[in-house]
Image 1 (cartoon, rainbow, N blue to C red):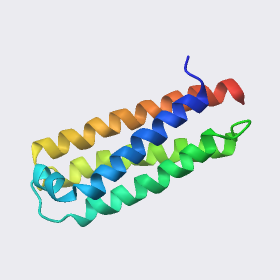
Image 2: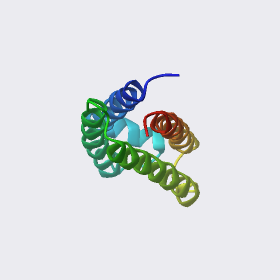
Image 3: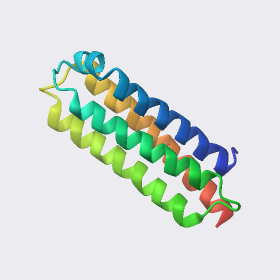
Image 4: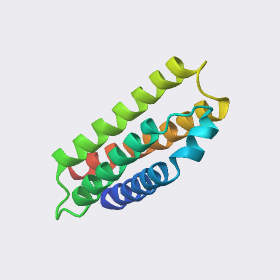
Length: 124
């Protein structure tokens, strides 16, 4: 099994990279989603960059702080729940590609949460 700190660093890197992408190419991403507003993508990107900094900081703890890991897991779970709500609420507003993208990211985030939970059980 991958060490908890490694899993969290993967989470931090993928979250930060996604956030930077959402911020820098919000217009084209909005187009793929079939919408014109870019602010939701920029806002999500800013959140993800800040989240990634926190996750990375927690991952570097010696030892990793279980409370910090629990907060990251909670935020990941909330992201998945919010994604499901967004898909259901926006299904008629956004493109199929948009719904698929939200769902794919939610599956990735759920995987990160599960791996972090498994890693937390090992250290706690």
